[in-house]
Length: 345
Ligand SMILES: NC(=O)C1=CN([C@@H]2O[C@H](COP(=O)(O)OP(=O)(O)OC[C@H]3O[C@@H](n4cnc5c(N)ncnc54)[C@H](O)[C@@H]3O)[C@@H](O)[C@H]2O)C=CC1
Ligand SMILES: CC(C)=CCC[C@@H](C)[C@H]1CC[C@H]2C3=C(CC[C@]12C)[C@@]1(C)CCC(=O)C[C@@H]1CC3
Image (tube, rainbow, N blue to C red; front, side, top):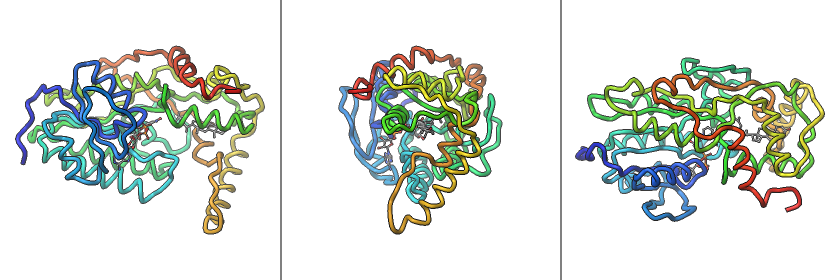
Protein backbone atom coordinates (compact mmCIF):
# COMPACT_ATOMS: atom_id res chain seq x y z
CA UNK A 1 0.00 0.00 0.00
CA UNK A 2 1.46 3.37 -1.01
CA UNK A 3 1.72 6.32 1.37
CA UNK A 4 -1.18 8.76 1.07
CA UNK A 5 -0.53 11.89 -0.91
CA UNK A 6 -0.67 15.09 1.16
CA UNK A 7 -4.39 16.09 1.36
CA UNK A 8 -5.06 19.39 -0.40
CA UNK A 9 -2.17 18.83 -2.84
CA UNK A 10 -2.94 20.58 -6.12
CA UNK A 11 -1.51 17.81 -8.28
CA UNK A 12 -4.17 15.86 -10.12
CA UNK A 13 -4.41 13.39 -12.99
CA UNK A 14 -6.78 13.44 -15.95
CA UNK A 15 -7.23 10.04 -17.59
CA UNK A 16 -8.53 10.71 -21.11
CA UNK A 17 -7.10 14.25 -20.98
CA UNK A 18 -6.31 14.29 -24.72
CA UNK A 19 -10.01 14.08 -25.60
CA UNK A 20 -12.64 16.77 -26.15
CA UNK A 21 -13.91 17.06 -22.57
CA UNK A 22 -10.54 16.05 -21.05
CA UNK A 23 -8.65 18.89 -22.73
CA UNK A 24 -11.19 21.53 -21.63
CA UNK A 25 -10.93 20.09 -18.10
CA UNK A 26 -7.12 20.20 -18.15
CA UNK A 27 -7.15 23.83 -19.32
CA UNK A 28 -9.52 24.89 -16.51
CA UNK A 29 -7.54 22.96 -13.89
CA UNK A 30 -4.36 24.79 -14.95
CA UNK A 31 -6.22 28.14 -14.68
CA UNK A 32 -7.19 27.17 -11.14
CA UNK A 33 -3.59 26.50 -10.10
CA UNK A 34 -3.50 22.68 -10.39
CA UNK A 35 -0.61 20.87 -12.00
CA UNK A 36 -1.79 18.04 -14.21
CA UNK A 37 -0.57 14.56 -14.99
CA UNK A 38 -2.33 13.65 -18.25
CA UNK A 39 -2.80 9.96 -19.08
CA UNK A 40 -4.13 8.98 -22.50
CA UNK A 41 -3.56 6.41 -25.20
CA UNK A 42 -2.75 9.27 -27.62
CA UNK A 43 -1.23 12.74 -27.31
CA UNK A 44 -3.11 15.59 -29.00
CA UNK A 45 -1.41 18.73 -27.58
CA UNK A 46 1.25 20.06 -25.19
CA UNK A 47 0.81 22.68 -22.47
CA UNK A 48 3.07 24.08 -19.74
CA UNK A 49 2.07 22.59 -16.36
CA UNK A 50 0.98 19.30 -17.96
CA UNK A 51 3.06 16.10 -17.83
CA UNK A 52 1.92 13.72 -20.53
CA UNK A 53 1.92 9.94 -19.96
CA UNK A 54 1.02 7.81 -22.94
CA UNK A 55 -0.56 4.45 -22.17
CA UNK A 56 -3.61 2.23 -22.10
CA UNK A 57 -5.66 2.54 -18.91
CA UNK A 58 -5.94 -1.25 -18.79
CA UNK A 59 -2.20 -1.30 -17.96
CA UNK A 60 -1.81 -0.74 -14.21
CA UNK A 61 1.95 -0.21 -14.30
CA UNK A 62 1.58 2.53 -16.91
CA UNK A 63 -1.14 4.18 -14.79
CA UNK A 64 0.95 3.99 -11.62
CA UNK A 65 3.69 6.17 -13.05
CA UNK A 66 1.07 8.82 -14.00
CA UNK A 67 -0.54 8.69 -10.52
CA UNK A 68 2.66 9.28 -8.55
CA UNK A 69 2.12 12.12 -5.99
CA UNK A 70 -1.43 12.65 -7.24
CA UNK A 71 -4.28 13.06 -4.72
CA UNK A 72 -7.16 13.61 -7.16
CA UNK A 73 -7.98 11.68 -10.35
CA UNK A 74 -10.52 12.53 -13.07
CA UNK A 75 -11.41 9.55 -15.26
CA UNK A 76 -12.95 10.77 -18.52
CA UNK A 77 -11.56 8.23 -20.99
CA UNK A 78 -13.82 6.04 -23.11
CA UNK A 79 -13.88 4.61 -26.62
CA UNK A 80 -16.14 6.73 -28.89
CA UNK A 81 -19.82 5.65 -28.79
CA UNK A 82 -19.82 5.42 -32.60
CA UNK A 83 -17.23 2.60 -32.55
CA UNK A 84 -20.01 0.20 -31.45
CA UNK A 85 -17.34 -2.40 -30.55
CA UNK A 86 -18.62 -4.51 -27.65
CA UNK A 87 -15.29 -6.11 -26.75
CA UNK A 88 -13.48 -2.76 -26.78
CA UNK A 89 -16.13 -1.13 -24.55
CA UNK A 90 -15.99 -4.04 -22.10
CA UNK A 91 -12.19 -4.03 -22.00
CA UNK A 92 -11.79 -0.26 -21.55
CA UNK A 93 -14.94 0.82 -19.66
CA UNK A 94 -15.31 -2.20 -17.37
CA UNK A 95 -11.95 -4.01 -16.92
CA UNK A 96 -10.06 -0.74 -17.50
CA UNK A 97 -12.06 1.07 -14.82
CA UNK A 98 -11.37 -1.77 -12.36
CA UNK A 99 -7.68 -1.24 -13.15
CA UNK A 100 -8.01 2.52 -12.64
CA UNK A 101 -9.60 1.96 -9.19
CA UNK A 102 -6.91 -0.52 -8.18
CA UNK A 103 -4.14 1.80 -9.40
CA UNK A 104 -5.68 4.71 -7.42
CA UNK A 105 -5.73 2.56 -4.26
CA UNK A 106 -2.14 1.39 -4.82
CA UNK A 107 -0.93 4.94 -5.47
CA UNK A 108 -2.63 6.43 -2.38
CA UNK A 109 -5.04 8.60 -4.42
CA UNK A 110 -7.82 10.05 -2.21
CA UNK A 111 -10.47 11.20 -4.69
CA UNK A 112 -11.75 9.76 -7.96
CA UNK A 113 -14.21 11.71 -10.14
CA UNK A 114 -15.75 9.66 -12.97
CA UNK A 115 -17.30 11.09 -16.12
CA UNK A 116 -20.35 8.89 -16.47
CA UNK A 117 -23.34 9.75 -18.68
CA UNK A 118 -27.00 10.63 -18.18
CA UNK A 119 -27.70 7.94 -20.80
CA UNK A 120 -27.22 5.27 -18.11
CA UNK A 121 -30.97 5.58 -17.42
CA UNK A 122 -32.08 6.04 -21.06
CA UNK A 123 -33.79 3.11 -22.83
CA UNK A 124 -34.85 4.86 -26.04
CA UNK A 125 -38.16 6.14 -24.62
CA UNK A 126 -39.02 9.56 -23.14
CA UNK A 127 -37.19 10.77 -20.01
CA UNK A 128 -38.58 14.11 -18.78
CA UNK A 129 -36.72 15.95 -16.02
CA UNK A 130 -35.10 12.64 -14.97
CA UNK A 131 -33.58 12.62 -11.49
CA UNK A 132 -30.61 10.58 -10.26
CA UNK A 133 -32.90 8.09 -8.47
CA UNK A 134 -34.20 6.69 -11.80
CA UNK A 135 -33.12 3.03 -12.11
CA UNK A 136 -30.31 2.12 -14.51
CA UNK A 137 -31.59 1.18 -17.98
CA UNK A 138 -32.57 -2.51 -18.05
CA UNK A 139 -32.26 -2.50 -21.83
CA UNK A 140 -29.48 0.02 -22.59
CA UNK A 141 -29.62 1.39 -26.14
CA UNK A 142 -26.10 0.23 -27.09
CA UNK A 143 -22.88 -1.41 -25.78
CA UNK A 144 -21.45 1.99 -24.94
CA UNK A 145 -24.32 2.73 -22.54
CA UNK A 146 -24.32 -0.82 -21.16
CA UNK A 147 -20.64 -0.51 -20.20
CA UNK A 148 -21.07 3.07 -18.89
CA UNK A 149 -23.62 1.62 -16.42
CA UNK A 150 -21.17 -1.04 -15.20
CA UNK A 151 -18.40 1.54 -15.02
CA UNK A 152 -20.46 3.93 -12.89
CA UNK A 153 -21.48 1.14 -10.50
CA UNK A 154 -17.84 0.08 -10.07
CA UNK A 155 -16.66 3.60 -9.25
CA UNK A 156 -19.50 4.46 -6.86
CA UNK A 157 -19.22 1.10 -5.04
CA UNK A 158 -15.47 1.67 -4.59
CA UNK A 159 -16.15 4.71 -2.36
CA UNK A 160 -14.67 3.76 1.00
CA UNK A 161 -14.49 6.38 3.75
CA UNK A 162 -12.52 4.20 6.25
CA UNK A 163 -9.85 3.64 3.58
CA UNK A 164 -9.86 7.36 2.75
CA UNK A 165 -10.83 6.72 -0.89
CA UNK A 166 -13.77 8.89 -2.03
CA UNK A 167 -15.58 8.67 -5.34
CA UNK A 168 -18.31 10.55 -7.21
CA UNK A 169 -19.77 10.36 -10.74
CA UNK A 170 -20.77 13.21 -13.04
CA UNK A 171 -23.48 12.42 -15.59
CA UNK A 172 -23.37 14.96 -18.45
CA UNK A 173 -25.66 14.89 -21.45
CA UNK A 174 -25.10 16.02 -25.05
CA UNK A 175 -21.80 17.83 -24.50
CA UNK A 176 -21.02 20.40 -27.18
CA UNK A 177 -18.47 23.17 -27.69
CA UNK A 178 -15.30 24.09 -29.56
CA UNK A 179 -13.16 21.11 -30.68
CA UNK A 180 -15.97 18.56 -30.23
CA UNK A 181 -15.19 15.84 -32.80
CA UNK A 182 -18.69 14.29 -32.73
CA UNK A 183 -21.81 16.41 -32.57
CA UNK A 184 -21.23 19.37 -34.93
CA UNK A 185 -19.06 17.41 -37.43
CA UNK A 186 -21.72 14.62 -37.65
CA UNK A 187 -24.43 17.20 -38.16
CA UNK A 188 -22.53 19.11 -40.84
CA UNK A 189 -21.58 15.88 -42.60
CA UNK A 190 -25.29 14.91 -42.70
CA UNK A 191 -26.20 18.41 -44.01
CA UNK A 192 -23.52 18.29 -46.71
CA UNK A 193 -24.89 14.93 -47.87
CA UNK A 194 -28.41 16.40 -48.07
CA UNK A 195 -29.69 14.33 -45.12
CA UNK A 196 -30.78 17.22 -42.90
CA UNK A 197 -34.03 18.10 -44.64
CA UNK A 198 -36.27 16.09 -42.32
CA UNK A 199 -37.51 16.41 -38.75
CA UNK A 200 -38.18 13.05 -37.12
CA UNK A 201 -41.54 13.17 -35.32
CA UNK A 202 -43.39 16.42 -34.54
CA UNK A 203 -40.16 18.18 -33.53
CA UNK A 204 -41.33 19.14 -30.02
CA UNK A 205 -39.13 16.68 -28.06
CA UNK A 206 -36.97 18.45 -25.48
CA UNK A 207 -33.36 17.38 -24.93
CA UNK A 208 -30.39 18.57 -22.86
CA UNK A 209 -27.37 19.88 -24.72
CA UNK A 210 -24.65 20.92 -22.30
CA UNK A 211 -21.91 23.41 -23.05
CA UNK A 212 -18.53 21.84 -22.32
CA UNK A 213 -17.45 24.53 -19.82
CA UNK A 214 -20.49 23.77 -17.66
CA UNK A 215 -19.54 20.09 -17.64
CA UNK A 216 -15.99 21.03 -16.61
CA UNK A 217 -17.37 23.31 -13.87
CA UNK A 218 -19.48 20.41 -12.52
CA UNK A 219 -16.43 18.11 -12.40
CA UNK A 220 -14.28 20.62 -10.51
CA UNK A 221 -17.06 21.45 -8.04
CA UNK A 222 -17.53 17.72 -7.38
CA UNK A 223 -13.79 17.24 -6.78
CA UNK A 224 -13.60 20.21 -4.44
CA UNK A 225 -16.72 19.15 -2.45
CA UNK A 226 -15.60 15.53 -2.13
CA UNK A 227 -14.78 15.13 1.58
CA UNK A 228 -15.56 12.31 4.02
CA UNK A 229 -18.27 14.42 5.71
CA UNK A 230 -20.03 15.50 2.50
CA UNK A 231 -23.26 13.93 1.15
CA UNK A 232 -21.78 13.54 -2.33
CA UNK A 233 -19.55 10.51 -1.60
CA UNK A 234 -20.49 7.52 -3.79
CA UNK A 235 -23.29 9.42 -5.61
CA UNK A 236 -24.01 10.35 -9.25
CA UNK A 237 -24.82 13.95 -10.32
CA UNK A 238 -26.52 15.19 -13.49
CA UNK A 239 -24.78 18.20 -14.95
CA UNK A 240 -26.74 19.99 -17.66
CA UNK A 241 -27.26 23.52 -19.00
CA UNK A 242 -30.59 23.50 -17.13
CA UNK A 243 -32.22 24.78 -20.32
CA UNK A 244 -33.81 21.81 -22.15
CA UNK A 245 -34.34 22.71 -25.81
CA UNK A 246 -36.22 21.06 -28.68
CA UNK A 247 -33.72 18.66 -30.30
CA UNK A 248 -34.58 20.03 -33.75
CA UNK A 249 -34.32 23.69 -32.65
CA UNK A 250 -30.80 23.02 -31.38
CA UNK A 251 -29.85 21.27 -34.65
CA UNK A 252 -31.40 24.12 -36.68
CA UNK A 253 -29.59 26.86 -34.70
CA UNK A 254 -26.22 25.21 -35.27
CA UNK A 255 -26.94 24.50 -38.95
CA UNK A 256 -28.25 27.99 -39.70
CA UNK A 257 -25.31 29.51 -37.76
CA UNK A 258 -22.97 27.62 -40.10
CA UNK A 259 -24.87 28.68 -43.23
CA UNK A 260 -26.94 25.50 -43.88
CA UNK A 261 -30.73 25.28 -44.20
CA UNK A 262 -32.73 24.11 -41.18
CA UNK A 263 -34.68 20.83 -41.57
CA UNK A 264 -38.33 21.51 -42.51
CA UNK A 265 -40.23 18.37 -43.53
CA UNK A 266 -41.68 16.03 -40.91
CA UNK A 267 -41.42 12.23 -41.01
CA UNK A 268 -43.33 9.97 -38.58
CA UNK A 269 -41.07 8.70 -35.78
CA UNK A 270 -42.24 5.07 -36.00
CA UNK A 271 -41.64 4.95 -39.76
CA UNK A 272 -38.04 6.24 -39.47
CA UNK A 273 -37.32 4.03 -36.46
CA UNK A 274 -38.65 0.98 -38.35
CA UNK A 275 -36.53 1.82 -41.42
CA UNK A 276 -33.45 2.28 -39.22
CA UNK A 277 -34.06 -1.13 -37.64
CA UNK A 278 -34.39 -2.72 -41.07
CA UNK A 279 -31.18 -1.05 -42.25
CA UNK A 280 -29.39 -2.19 -39.10
CA UNK A 281 -30.56 -5.77 -39.72
CA UNK A 282 -29.39 -5.64 -43.35
CA UNK A 283 -25.99 -4.25 -42.30
CA UNK A 284 -25.68 -7.04 -39.74
CA UNK A 285 -26.60 -9.78 -42.27
CA UNK A 286 -24.25 -8.36 -44.92
CA UNK A 287 -21.32 -7.50 -42.64
CA UNK A 288 -19.19 -10.57 -43.66
CA UNK A 289 -19.34 -9.34 -47.29
CA UNK A 290 -19.30 -5.52 -47.03
CA UNK A 291 -18.72 -2.86 -44.43
CA UNK A 292 -21.21 -0.01 -44.33
CA UNK A 293 -21.95 2.48 -41.52
CA UNK A 294 -25.49 3.89 -41.87
CA UNK A 295 -26.20 7.50 -40.71
CA UNK A 296 -29.62 6.39 -39.47
CA UNK A 297 -29.11 3.86 -36.68
CA UNK A 298 -32.03 2.99 -34.35
CA UNK A 299 -30.05 4.57 -31.49
CA UNK A 300 -29.59 7.86 -33.35
CA UNK A 301 -33.25 7.95 -34.37
CA UNK A 302 -34.26 7.40 -30.73
CA UNK A 303 -31.91 10.21 -29.62
CA UNK A 304 -33.33 12.54 -32.27
CA UNK A 305 -37.02 11.73 -31.74
CA UNK A 306 -37.59 11.31 -27.98
CA UNK A 307 -37.51 13.54 -24.91
CA UNK A 308 -34.36 13.13 -22.82
CA UNK A 309 -33.68 15.88 -20.35
CA UNK A 310 -32.57 15.65 -16.76
CA UNK A 311 -32.88 17.57 -13.51
CA UNK A 312 -29.67 19.05 -12.07
CA UNK A 313 -31.34 20.09 -8.77
CA UNK A 314 -29.19 17.66 -6.76
CA UNK A 315 -26.00 19.21 -8.14
CA UNK A 316 -27.34 22.68 -7.34
CA UNK A 317 -28.14 21.66 -3.77
CA UNK A 318 -25.03 19.57 -2.94
CA UNK A 319 -22.37 21.17 -5.14
CA UNK A 320 -23.62 24.74 -5.48
CA UNK A 321 -23.72 24.09 -9.24
CA UNK A 322 -25.10 26.70 -11.63
CA UNK A 323 -24.31 26.74 -15.36
CA UNK A 324 -21.60 29.32 -16.13
CA UNK A 325 -22.37 29.64 -19.87
CA UNK A 326 -25.93 29.94 -21.23
CA UNK A 327 -27.14 27.79 -24.11
CA UNK A 328 -27.37 30.83 -26.42
CA UNK A 329 -23.80 31.89 -25.65
CA UNK A 330 -22.56 28.28 -25.87
CA UNK A 331 -24.10 27.85 -29.34
CA UNK A 332 -22.62 31.19 -30.51
CA UNK A 333 -19.12 30.24 -29.28
CA UNK A 334 -19.41 26.78 -30.84
CA UNK A 335 -20.55 28.05 -34.23
CA UNK A 336 -17.74 30.65 -34.27
CA UNK A 337 -15.17 27.94 -33.52
CA UNK A 338 -15.87 25.89 -36.66
CA UNK A 339 -15.03 28.25 -39.60
CA UNK A 340 -13.86 25.24 -41.64
CA UNK A 341 -17.30 23.59 -41.34
CA UNK A 342 -19.21 26.61 -42.68
CA UNK A 343 -21.16 26.14 -45.89
CA UNK A 344 -18.84 26.70 -48.84
CA UNK A 345 -15.63 26.59 -46.76
N1 LIG B 1 -19.44 13.81 -25.60
C1 LIG B 1 -20.60 13.65 -24.98
O1 LIG B 1 -21.64 14.16 -25.41
C2 LIG B 1 -20.66 12.86 -23.72
C3 LIG B 1 -19.54 12.23 -23.20
N2 LIG B 1 -19.61 11.55 -22.02
C4 LIG B 1 -18.42 10.93 -21.43
O2 LIG B 1 -17.42 11.92 -21.33
C5 LIG B 1 -16.12 11.33 -21.43
C6 LIG B 1 -15.30 12.11 -22.42
O3 LIG B 1 -15.94 12.07 -23.68
P1 LIG B 1 -15.39 12.91 -24.92
O4 LIG B 1 -14.40 13.91 -24.47
O5 LIG B 1 -16.58 13.32 -25.69
O6 LIG B 1 -14.66 11.75 -25.74
P2 LIG B 1 -13.27 11.77 -26.51
O7 LIG B 1 -13.29 10.59 -27.41
O8 LIG B 1 -12.98 13.09 -27.13
O9 LIG B 1 -12.21 11.52 -25.34
C7 LIG B 1 -11.97 10.27 -24.77
C8 LIG B 1 -10.47 10.10 -24.55
O10 LIG B 1 -10.24 8.81 -23.97
C9 LIG B 1 -9.05 8.30 -24.53
N3 LIG B 1 -9.03 6.84 -24.40
C10 LIG B 1 -9.86 5.96 -25.00
N4 LIG B 1 -9.48 4.71 -24.68
C11 LIG B 1 -8.43 4.80 -23.85
C12 LIG B 1 -7.59 3.85 -23.21
N5 LIG B 1 -7.78 2.53 -23.35
N6 LIG B 1 -6.59 4.29 -22.42
C13 LIG B 1 -6.35 5.63 -22.29
N7 LIG B 1 -7.10 6.57 -22.89
C14 LIG B 1 -8.10 6.16 -23.67
C15 LIG B 1 -9.09 8.74 -25.99
O11 LIG B 1 -7.81 8.69 -26.60
C16 LIG B 1 -9.66 10.15 -25.86
O12 LIG B 1 -8.62 11.11 -25.79
C17 LIG B 1 -16.37 9.86 -21.81
O13 LIG B 1 -16.26 9.08 -20.65
C18 LIG B 1 -17.79 9.85 -22.30
O14 LIG B 1 -18.40 8.60 -22.06
C19 LIG B 1 -20.79 11.46 -21.34
C20 LIG B 1 -21.92 12.04 -21.81
C21 LIG B 1 -21.95 12.78 -23.04
C1 LIG C 1 -28.32 15.03 -26.69
C2 LIG C 1 -27.44 13.99 -27.21
C3 LIG C 1 -27.32 12.73 -26.46
C4 LIG C 1 -26.73 14.24 -28.30
C5 LIG C 1 -25.77 13.23 -28.79
C6 LIG C 1 -25.07 13.63 -30.03
C7 LIG C 1 -25.34 12.72 -31.21
C8 LIG C 1 -25.97 11.42 -30.79
C9 LIG C 1 -26.15 13.51 -32.21
C10 LIG C 1 -25.23 14.55 -32.83
C11 LIG C 1 -25.66 14.74 -34.27
C12 LIG C 1 -26.96 14.01 -34.33
C13 LIG C 1 -27.57 13.66 -35.61
C14 LIG C 1 -28.50 12.64 -35.68
C15 LIG C 1 -28.77 11.79 -34.49
C16 LIG C 1 -28.12 12.20 -33.20
C17 LIG C 1 -26.75 12.80 -33.42
C18 LIG C 1 -25.78 11.81 -34.02
C19 LIG C 1 -29.17 12.29 -36.95
C20 LIG C 1 -28.47 11.09 -37.52
C21 LIG C 1 -30.64 11.99 -36.70
C22 LIG C 1 -31.35 11.66 -37.99
C23 LIG C 1 -31.17 12.73 -39.02
O1 LIG C 1 -32.07 13.26 -39.56
C24 LIG C 1 -29.76 13.12 -39.25
C25 LIG C 1 -29.13 13.50 -37.91
C26 LIG C 1 -27.70 13.96 -38.07
C27 LIG C 1 -27.21 14.49 -36.76
